[in-house]
Image (cartoon, rainbow, N blue to C red; front, side, top):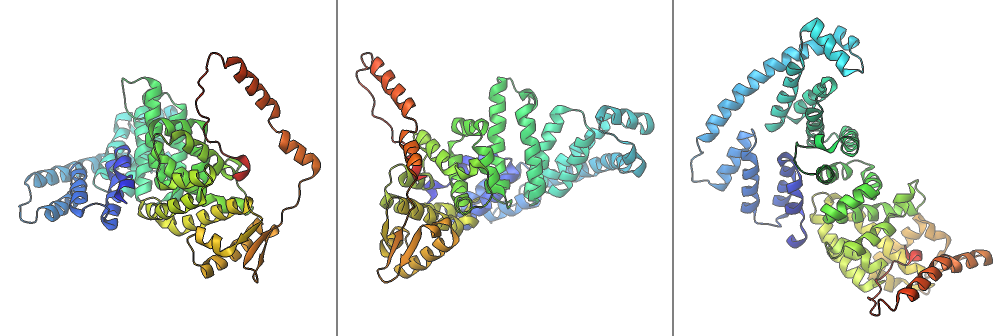
Length: 459
């Protein structure tokens, strides 16, 4: 399933250190030749100070060649730079970690800088050493140390450009150390910075238009956030709330439509819990409906088995095609770096969606037929359907007749007034649209074919 792998698409939007876990995953999945992946790892490692790692990759790629001398020079330079920066940074830390200084510091950064200058002769240039040392720590893989130095720098610095850069470095360090609660806090803070601060100070100084720079920053943030959202316990819900907001949905549709795979997967993973009565926001409860509309709009740019599964199920109502796409989607999710550990949960929730849609349009369902559509044997399907009815609100409407091996769906009839409301919903709007179409028909004699629409009651 290499044709559906998104690693090569996502890596250009990541810091090189964040790319290492994706490449290591590709080695495990064997989607691509190991030699090619190791070559990519080596090219990335050469640009860091993780010299031992780069040397080991070189030896794997070229077992019969001598190690280039450039690595010895880089190692000596890295050691000397580390010693120099550590001495300079420690001098600053000795001051700011002093209990008396910690008590004297206030919320006003300018006031704090003046206090440090007057009492300890500590200037902004000296404080910037914390940023430089934190950045250096990051380049040779000491991510926890980098996070500490960047945090201390950000508390004191008034330099907006370096503060924003420190935000990105701190987020990457928290991701690579697996501190997901801290990473989520950092992600939310950085998102506020990206959304509110002047675009010229977001990521890099650039001659691009401000709006374009902000779009690029949001695009990078979307990709970095995947690490957090698919590792934090509440991450899938938070992903839907963020990515389906107008600002970020527009960013995704404009710059990175492949992120639709992750929105669709998060919506599928969240659907069963939302339907079962778990507290969730309106956006999460209706996320399937929203994402299906976006998938229809963007299918000319991007589609894969995960998005096609939702399209076939909720737009085409083709259960056979949905079953085929689910078989492919199961493999795609299993091979995906971010989604692999959710494979079983994804499959279970996808089967729930098929059952829900199938039960909405049938009153009497053969268990064997439904089991086949769920890619289950008859016995497995029977057990799965019994558990589904027991665990969800379908239990109030569905009863199993084991003698006839069928499911009977008993829906309470709608009150008369509710039926009238449902039948006349949107009637005025449709009448107005029809009138408008009739007025414009002479100027547009050849009308395009209407697009498929999502049936509201089916989602």
